[in-house]
Image 1 (cartoon, rainbow, N blue to C red):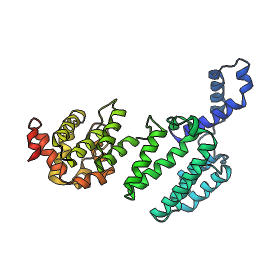
Image 2: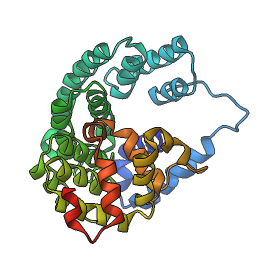
Image 3: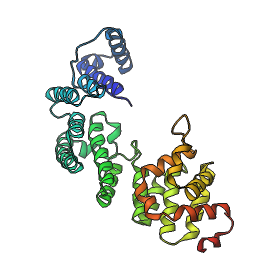
Image 4: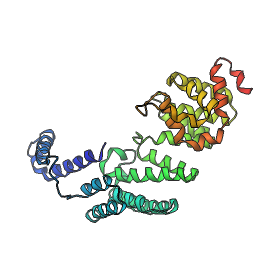
Length: 310
């Protein structure tokens, strides 16, 4: 969901609250929502007419569309003046202002304390656990936690990242942010078989490259080669380019992968998906650099599981 859509939903929620009397007097929610959209569309300015920013969302949209750091901070500060508890604006200010990763870590930690207080105060920790992405008001908090999670990985703080990833999935069980994929790679990095299998079982609706490949690496790292080959076979069924991917990494090295990115960028179930996964999770794949040569040899001879020990 785009920021513009979230902005409209916020206004719709406010409109509904302001017209509670009509709802109680028999006007349906659908009719009220339709009237809101008609009024909202009528209020939109033509493209050539500049409208003065009025809300925090307006200023944040302006901040996202400028590259100058000073101007970006000016817009974000305006947004924060209008909404002092706006976690999106605070997070973006931290990201723009921090000169070093440790400064950003400190800023995010402080913001998370504030976010925890806000979520507790509004009752979301009591009534919303598991549904945080489905609640519009908790999305800024989820974006903050997700940014912190990715920063921990970038800083090599893997144990902390695991804890953060598990907390994110606790808050949003549907995993709208794709945390399960990064967490699966972290479990494989630590050779945490129980955690990896439990995660895969929880989200086993589809066979996904981002789940099968790290499981193959995990069992390779543990020396359970037959299980690793099993997941490689499943990966080859899901992703038609899996063998080509392993051949390129094995024969030419990872630098050659960028040349394989298609004109259309990321596409699921193709080599682009595997390349994106590889580049995003180098911490795992760099920890098992011989895996790709081994995997390519065994994928060429999928029926010979005994080749695993060669």
